[in-house]
Image (cartoon, rainbow, N blue to C red; front, side, top):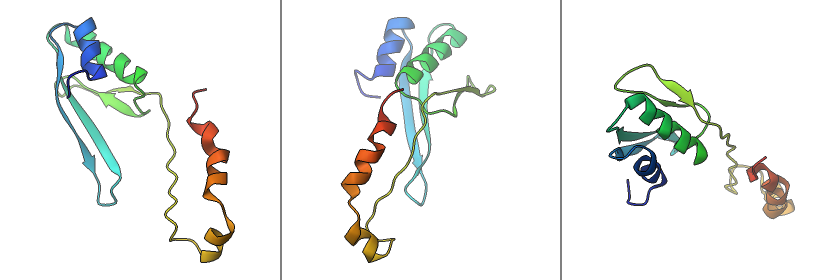
Length: 117
């Protein structure tokens, strides 16, 4: 991870000596994200370190359904954010729809979805 990464900052503050050491994103054939991994080296108490990681990731908007595990142990579920995908590609609907609709009006109608409750 890059220097100044929020998760690294949380680890430095709350679990000195622990750090993010790797990660990646798996993307499917449809170009959608399938999964993301973050690898963390925990220098101290592993369970406490995992709690620090989970708390930090939830503050940063980890999606519901996320999991964490220690060295192949059972996954621990976490995450609080929900998401909606809205695809407006301008090609899949009949031409009339694009001629008579304003995508910006739709944006105004959905902007409240991205605000925190």
